[in-house]
Length: 457
Image 1 (tube, rainbow, N blue to C red):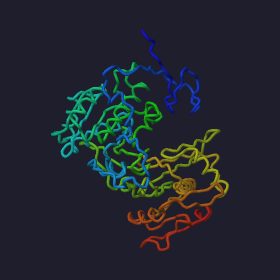
Image 2: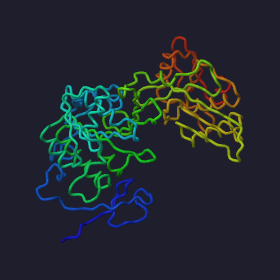
Image 3: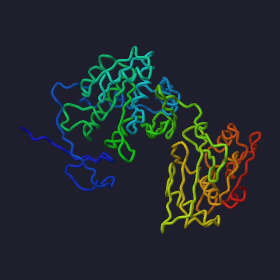
Image 4: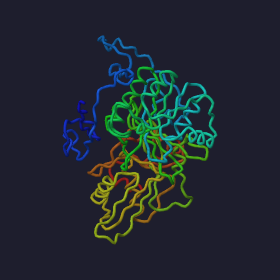
């Protein structure tokens, strides 16, 4: 009997090696190589599983001039959720593969079940569950009061069986919950392993592209919040979405991390209610639920998420430290950038916080990834340090440089207009973002240096 061949695959970057080694030579990570058993395809296996050609759709062996490629609009259809469509770039694209990740309890299965039940009223939808029984899915659908007529269900973990049923049913939307439970008979490793996840996703994606089926995959996440499985899985798919939100939070945020059909880092907001997830049309309204009494250290900033501005509140607490090394805690922001901004505040603003604990929090559980929050963070810290509340009608945005300059940020005009819509009458912005004519009732204060911004308070 021939000995089964094996290879070692890096779980971080997908690089393959013939033997095990402690460090991956490609991504330089340690202890990330896992053994993968390689076996030849089983005689008589389905071409949809074993075939490698036509992975990107229709096979074209003729060279085509780029100018001759048809530029017709990619057909899309709605997922029945406006926020879901926004993150996807305008809707679901036939032949696309979308990976939805998130922590346990975030609402991945709930969101896809709601989408499947509503889409089944007008499209052919096949929902494959590998983690729950059909009765458990039916109980959830009944609890959420969803329309269940027309939705095709299948409880299966074998990719060969799933593809056989899909070839017979010809669904327009295929949902796999989850990819970590799927397995191929020809792969010797257990479901959820590197080889199984990679080959199962490749077989399902190949079928989706060849049949113009929308493929929605549910993926688990690791402790650090990244998607479990090999990194090569993220390169196979067309869109990678992450559903965030703690078990104690009423709101869930759906963020696009990769999207071949739309803007990256787009944000959709949902509220978890008794009857499932409900989209939030105006996210700024929920993030601005502030107390009537204004307190020191609280300030509203305008951040840009994907293709729209969102107003969020940042809170700072500065207190005398009893430790040799004062604490720097930032929730929703980069802690390293907070330390840098405090150094700029000392050097160019004349305010010393080296003996103070600094705590920062973005209200609503939003994670701010852009630098336009720099100026608002510093002004909130100054407000808490001096115990001086800031005006409720004040909104701030701008990037702070190491030399104390206030740099302009993209889409400044749209940010100011959004703030004016929510009743803000005063704004401190970079001089490069100052509009030629401010919105009616809005006073715009343009600054170039951090000292100017502190004087404007």
